[in-house]
View 1: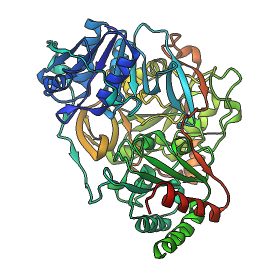
View 2 (view 1 turned 135 degrees about the horizontal axis):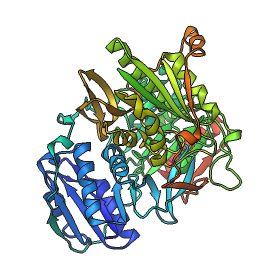
View 3 (view 1 turned 90 degrees about the vertical axis):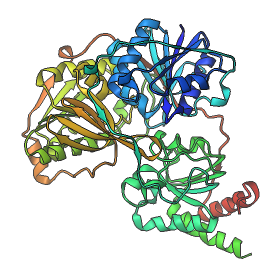
View 4 (view 1 turned 180 degrees about the horizontal axis):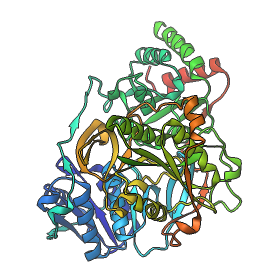
Length: 316
Length: 256
């Protein structure tokens, strides 16, 4: 086969990033099969019955009924050895980061991660997204992971495919980890995922005492408040306000970012925003590449004036 | 408890990034370097584990040209015991597999209980080295640890998942774990620590003693991102910026 797409189970159904990976593989072309592992493998295959793929290979062995790095990396390696795909494709999720390098090392196949484009060669971001890099390999096989939203699940080409279940040999000694059930921490009472207006705070806010100006701005706009990771890590806002790969994914009509540089792990959480207005002191901040409106300036100077002007507008 | 912390020296975030004439990387001669910010959390976690378990050794490991000794010394100044410097004599290595093979060949005989890394590097951002090395050395692996809990011959890690989810996983030692940023507050080195660091050992391993020839992937060129996005740059002072922003909010986005 040309391409093997390794699927991820998102609490019983196919992860969005797996669908995006399929769309990406279809765009690359060739014969494509998908691999579903775990207790929900058949359900995931079922979701793909109307998609243009050669087949979905399903594996449900006791030792990989739920995710673990040892079992998954062993099973995926076995499938790669028996099916010999030229390219292995997967979404760049936290799970992928956890086990795919194990496959890379087991099989000595290079893993090119977090790809943002395949149009003109393999492109990933480097140096905190300040530059892009064209990556090449002369290896016979390669593993590629796609950054969230590089491809769109809506672009999956329809067709039909069947599922084929296969047996794998897995010794219990292979799985050394003991995992507990995943859990969510304090969810808070703020629904960022469906918020239409968001004011988001980055490190550029500089001090905890400046945080209130962002909340004041949000109040006068009728917006929710979110923040980038460093602000949450400093304890200046609650963790449920975090936006990014580890936090919430948002898609507001307006994402108003204050002093956020635009690091990759943050940007993947805001790619769905209809409009981005960014204020940052650094003219080279990566956030300006995805912003619709860019203000190079000092937010500590601008925001108080903006709040005052907005109050005046409101009173008119 | 013997802990290796893999650290990297990377271009600082404030520094301009001039691209080399042949475009295949940035001109490192013109750039100022810092400890890879995520690595600070890994160093701190190693020191905390050493303090909690009451004994042990923390070894700072870094690969690169002579200048990387600076970040090794930073780790030593914070409280690590010794360092290992894998010398590189050419341009930055960007192939995770060969980097991991080099480092594994040197770590192998030391039988570390734990190998800790930051979540990824701020230069190439491949995010694999710790897990590759874990596999190569037959260790169990875990990533994005938001909390660690060392027990008898095992370590429990609280893995960070997406969207505010977490999962505790217990892994037998030896283990290679990547540390998520923000799980601790990295200490500053004391003056005494800085002075003491000068006397601590840094073993230097020459390129011929660790370098593997086979490169499995490489960066052919770097370039400034071209975006098809139309971005309006709002210029001028704070007052004119405010005026334009109000206009955008009112008339273009209609959110007022």
